[in-house]
Image 1: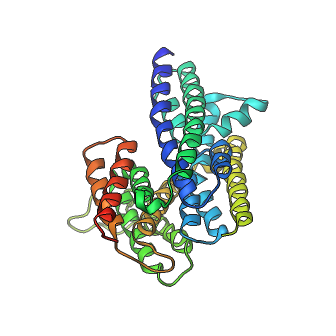
Image 2: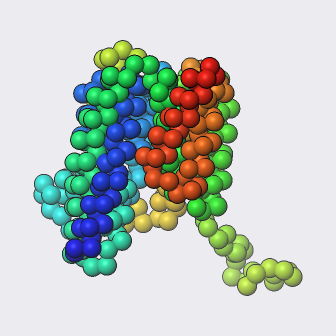
Image 3: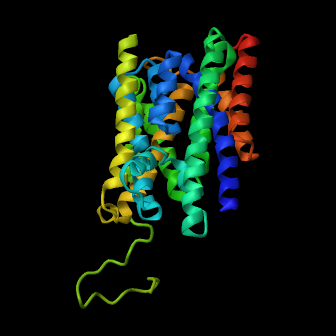
Length: 235
Length: 106
């Protein structure tokens, strides 16, 4: 329990620090302090928040901004499904738990050994990140407001680095690397032809191209009496 | 985008992302038992982040532009490879781009 809480608090503080960059980048993208704050209070899922302000900042369509954010938020649905039996919540607690379901709270919860520690890890990480993320979003947005031209401060490059930083830890599997490479190419090739924001949506098709096939291709089954396999085939 | 347009996008985006979490908390687990669904969902995250990285690094209105951002992202990749914390990576990237622009580069 105590280990879960300690881990949760350190994750909350570390994650909260990105809140500064989110607040500053949101204002640089043309949002007001209130709009940036509403995103951190209610949307509360970093990748989607960065995506929404990225598309808006690039002058993209509002619908493309919302669609990018929603597609990136899709993984929270899977997390919530996974956490359901672990947390065993009812009523308003279930809604609150859903709101706090993000990368960090899911990771901390599922890393704990027992049921009680898992629940403690979830609430401390989710609640802790929410508090830190929102306080530092406000600080970043107020600082960004006072900064002037965001390009002079390199904030456009910082936004790109933020996406790279979010992507990096997901790149370990070979399949993820192939997906990322394909998505990069799709986005770059589509950029001169389509309205800002649409190339990003199009790049999500890379996941279909690489994800439809199972990890280890099962041997083709041609019927009950399958052909005798030739030399060099696996078992 | 007009201020109203930004508000609409912000509110709609908040609603969509919150709804996804709530739906996940209420649907039966068996609905998403398929291994393929969760694999593709994970890869969608990777693909979108890579697409956003590409556009944020080299996008300019409707087109591409190579400028100080590319060098900054390169340095950010080195920082990530050296296991620097997220906030350090961001600050380093901003500093590289700001420095190059102070020297007169685009």
